Image (cartoon, rainbow, N blue to C red; front, side, top):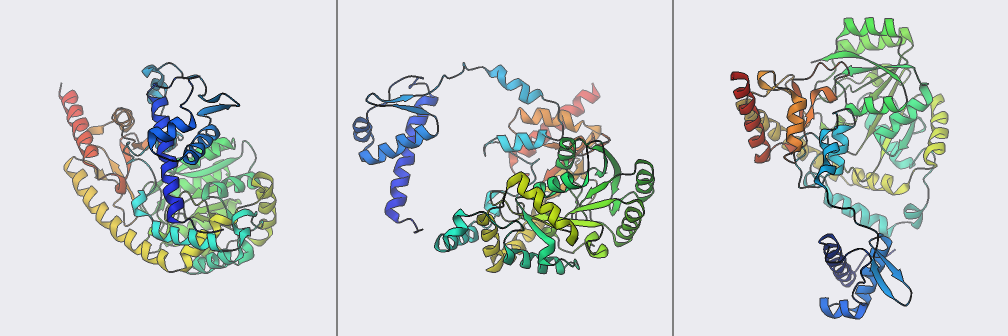
Length: 474
């Protein structure tokens, strides 16, 4: 494969311009469904481009389903446009806020919408230059990396590197105990397929990452929860819950906790392991935020040696959400079962994402990138916390690192109502009860500080809090 030349890049730009022009005319309804497009010659003359550029643009629009080609007759606008109706937006705005709500809103909207409720860094915080270098390296590499399925366990050099990284946390993971996945979510999905049946009980923290709940609901598990504090779960409740409900799994973060930003203490880590071992509970330890830490928290997998703890992670938060690459580290006799499940559900992982991650981790740029990210996060956390404090929004647990501020709204304000109001202003918030199985976080909100510095958010919060005070006074 060859690197594109400046001429090729220029041609691609011209093709995109022609496509954008046609798409705009369709959107503005100056070209209605069934309307014939200008001929290739007419379009080329009007836009000042070559006929081959128009042919390429029309072919791509056909592939997108925007237009159709009729042999001997030309090109025509495809399909039927539905009548414009603002009322059709109402179900999305009025939908009950559940564990899917924030994800659906954040993933379905464009960059014009503010997303302080999302769980990822802005694009300009990510190592785009390093990713481009890795892609160029891939383009010059072996063809199989671009076209072939990966091996069932995944790229060996990356598994070896991951094993060394886990060793820095005291986790003894050999390469043959590590399986690559497409994401941390896929890792949990595969583990649920292997370890639980519909109706089995799974224990989560309260609050916990809302997609844990969504995924467990998809597996038809019975979910129970235990309150999470500044140093881990409330242990008296944890012991009573395990004894009474006999869960098969406990899913948690031991590093930076989502959404609270808290970290597990060594004392609680030991108690958790003893109780789970006594009652036959397998622990899934999600370590996706490890590289945001400034001081490493204890890892359950390190204390346990991967006997009763499965350790998972991914690079979607620190490297790229488009480069889908996660991993599972577990006991050796479970790997074969997980490989079978991976083949059954996705056949084989791709080499492309793994090679990109490996290239960025190897060239030294990732370490420098994360150093810069941690510094920027610290500044953003200080800035947002101070500005929110002026509005009466205060941290429930002062975070030591990471991107999340778990905060209480003033005057018993309802976070869910505020999130609905924000959506009407093109702002996506993450109200506390999305994360709370017991629905005891109605006055709390998770803010992503990297996405919370836009003045429009502060203006909205200031107005909302002011209006709430006035309503309370009246």
